[in-house]
Image (cartoon, rainbow, N blue to C red; front, side, top):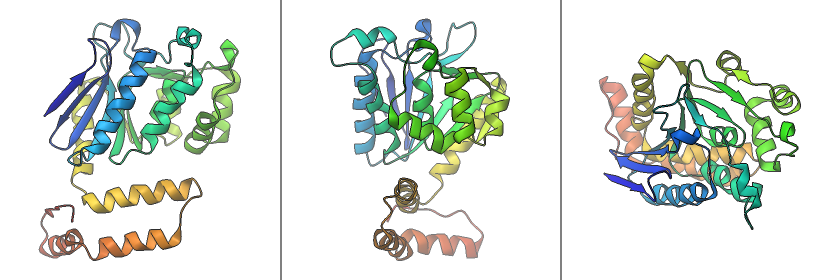
Length: 262
């Protein structure tokens, strides 16, 4: 078990039983992201990526004491005044998150605004709390959003929803988000932890090698970088693996497989 926090308010990393959890930790400021937080997140992502015991990364937020739960109010716009910071610095966070080795889940336990919406989109999977809202106010404050963020919006949410997000700056309700098919589920507050646990345990139960290699291939195909020879080598590697043999045996014997990642 590992728990790391740079200061009392920066994101907290906790690792246990193959699951890493990063918790945004500025509830009194609606979990806005300051430049210090960005650097902490990048360091935590690297630690998670390097820890081969980690199968799943859950990104969530501390919402204690908030009148209405807010996962993240976005980037602290005061950070744009700091030399060498701003959109380019922020962009590194979702870019790093999108290519992490473990399967990533955004446990969106509150409303989300601004650049933080791109962090949600950069995760592989999302589960949301009923009653939240989502708003992208970039054009409302005079900002053209960074290119990779726009591309991720279009890829994940579709062209029409992206135009609505940026060209009206109106919030999405959780019901509107649900219709986009972007979230695995929206869960009531009293069922939140159970819903998140079910999703993480479903992922942990998958064959480690197959799920990790499949994530790589999906990402490469989605970005137009898929090399068929590389993809087929992954097919062959998993088809010859001990895990695939175990999976077939477990299916035949009507039991749960015990995968070892080899």
